[in-house]
Image (cartoon, rainbow over the protein chains, first blue to last red):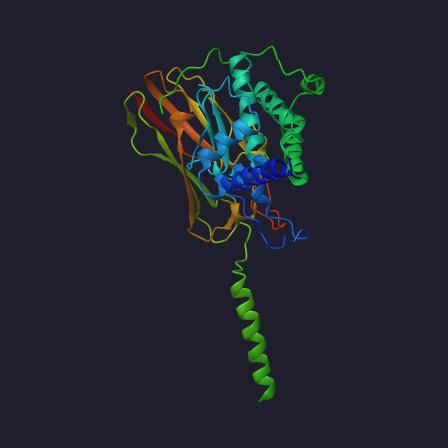
Length: 207
Length: 173
C-alpha cells in the first residue's frame, strides 16, 4: 500500500516537472525591483495623439491626415476623396467646390489642431452636399461661422489646448462680427441656412 | 587710454548685440511707394490648363516699411485680418466669377512680417484654376488687391493699407 502511494507521488512529481520543462519555465534568481515601473511602451498602449504625432514627426503628413480621420472619428462621407496634404498651401487649408480638401503644413502643429482643421473642412463638404455652399458674402461668412462653431463644440473631444481654443474663438469672432445683426441672431441659434444662392452640385475641377 | 578702450568695448558689445538681433529699422513708406504687380506665365490658355498667377509687392520708395509678406489669398468676403490677397476675376460675359473654395487661415505670425528695403519685393504665386472656374471659353479680366491690417505679435507697427494691382486679360480657348 505504502509502495503504491509513493509511486503515485513520484509519478505526479514527474508529470509536474515535465510540464514545467515543456513550458520552458526556469526559476529566476534575478531580483525584481518593484519600485521602478517598467517603461510604458512595454504595455503597448499608444494614444491617438502619439500615433498622429509620430507620423507628423516622421514628415509623413498624408499618413497623419489618414490617422487623424480614423482615430478622431472625422466624418469624411461628403468629401471628394480623402483630404490630402499640400506642400504648396503652407498657411492654408482649403475645401474646393468639387468637395476635395487640401491641408497645408501650418495645420500640423499638434494632432488636435490637425483633427479640428479636418473637421472644419468637413463642415464645408457637408454644406456643399446640403446645397448651403453660398456664393454671396453673408453666406460665405455664415459658412465659416458654422465651421468654427463645430470646432469649438468639439474642442474637448479633439483635445485642443487653451491657446488653440483661444485662436479658434478669435477667428470665429472675426467672421461673426462681419455678419449682419439679423444673421448674427440666426448664428446664435445655430441656424446656418440662409435664403441665398448656393453652388448647386459639386463639379469636378481640373487639377 | 583706458576710457577709449572702454568706449570701444561697449561699442563692440552693442554692435554685436544689434547685429545678432538682425535689427533692421522699419520706416513708414510714402503714399504709392508699394506697388502691386500681377502677371501670368502666358496670356493664352487651353481649356483645363493650369493658370499660374504671380503677384509681386515691390517697394519703389526710399523708406523701409514692415510688410506682411504672407500674401495669403482669401475670399474678398473674409475679414481683413485673414486676407492679404484677393483676386477679382471677371468672366467672358463680364460677370464676377466667384471664389470656388472655402479658405481657412490662421492669424499671421511674427515670421510673416519682413522689412521691405527700397527696391526690394516679395512675391507669391497662385494656381488660379483651383480656385476659380475657367470653364467658359473667352477672355477673363483679372486683378489682385493686397491689403494688410495686422501687426506682428511682437507689437511692431506694420504697414497697413490697400494696394490695387494692374489689370490683366487672359484668354481661355
